[in-house]
Image (cartoon, rainbow, N blue to C red; front, side, top):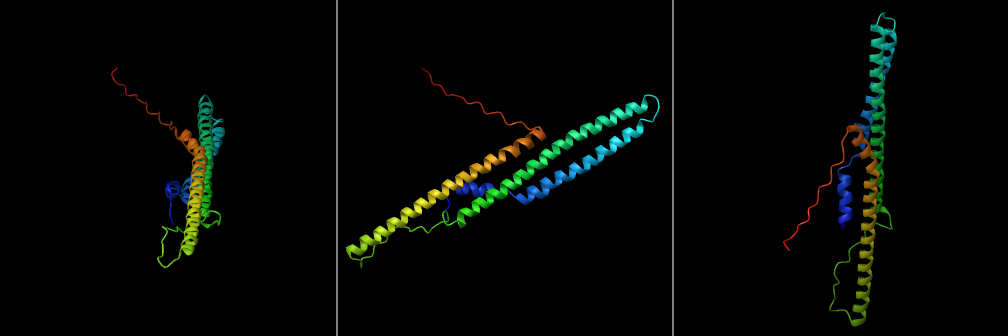
Length: 194
């Protein structure tokens, strides 16, 4: 089966993507971390409330410090929930795109058809048979070219959808981790002496 550049690009992107890893090692771990952080936040709030009974400035100061820590953890929990959702979205995207890519080969409308190769003339054929065989070959070659063009178009559309759907989870993870997009490289214009 032949693969054009768009299909090769799509296959390469999916070869690097594993929805089970993203879901199991990513989404599930972020969910687990969220639960642990939530437990710590609750414990800090309980401890802060218990500290109010301590006299003087110690109790209120301890309450405020623990309450601030719990509030900060709650902010982190919100980020972890966003990250978990982004990883789930990424895993869903990988699965959806993989299914679409696989359908290219199984759907009768887009499944690969045999390449008829070069026309082979047979010296035993009379002119009428030769014309009939050339006509069949031309039709088969045209159908093959049309099918390959359709497969390439669909592979490009699927790859573009993959990129588009991946943009949002990537943006969320960059924001969570504080990673800015790289600055564009300045372009230089070569000038000549006039």
